[in-house]
Image (cartoon, rainbow, N blue to C red; front, side, top):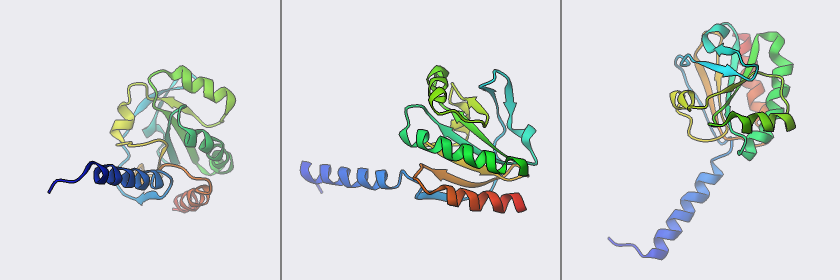
Length: 170
């Protein structure tokens, strides 16, 4: 069955609208399985290895400086980090750009206190099957992925807090 150009364009636009509608925090899932270990260079020029943080609840946030929702989410993540870090919780901001200077420039305007890591070759984002920006992964104290969030919308911090508190209590 052959469809007209108009029908094809209409279908494309509908799919695009659906995709855009789901690019916020609507796409969240609960999952299980070991978080793949990695080592990345940090903003402080040292290396950070995920497995060395075993015993903490970890929020891994994949972001890019060109991503508007990422910029919007950074202060929210920093607030969560400051509030829960004394309870063995940490945030790792993983920048996925080839040129880390863009990220460093953004961080001058939107400073954060949590560790920033640089995935300049996109090896870690591929390892975590990141499909869009921002993407957030919550890892429990045993090193297992428990929640995945794709996208960001204001107000998602309430869901993050609920999940973080649950993982801290375990």
